[in-house]
Image (cartoon, rainbow over all chains, first blue to last red; front, side, top):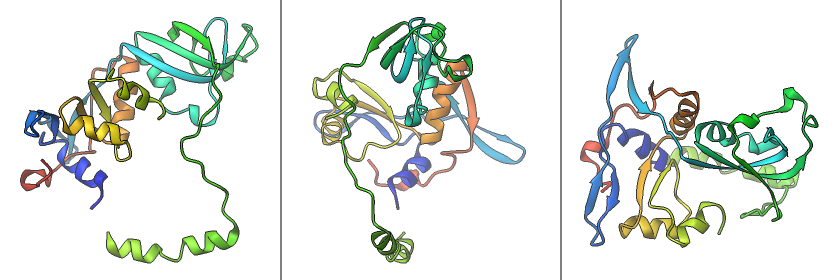
Length: 150
Length: 76
């Protein structure tokens, strides 16, 4: 059983400890979630997150705060940038207004509070290397084992 | 230590909403010793919670996380 499985199964009934005491007893348990049926299928009600501050990393930003993402930056960056009251953008490049074509603006300047130029290089926590075709063949060898053990 | 890890080490985070916390030792220690609140949320639900907030929608329904095995689990 995976972490994810336990997680998705026990979130709804509110039986996860949110916070512990110092002695290891549970201080706060999660609250059960409201459920409702639509078209014969059961659903859980989830409340939205309303953020105060968002830290967003972008590839390019112009002086009005219009931002363009690159590759994996298209993750939660856009919705968090639009979500928070104050959005602080760290940009790899700051360009003049108009240099980012309108259709390439992913986060509009109206959502952005401040833009700073990135001074640190991109750091990667875990490095991995491209695998050779032989290694890739080996990688599939144990797939049946994992499937059986789940 | 990267990203939120830096804020964790300086004890600037009191509550975290996350889907996966498996690899961060500092996080685990703080959670177990009661220095940190944790709200576990399925990944897709978390994405939608952010997007809903961005669009000004206060709540939504999702089939993820419905049903339970938690009642008799020893997860605590």
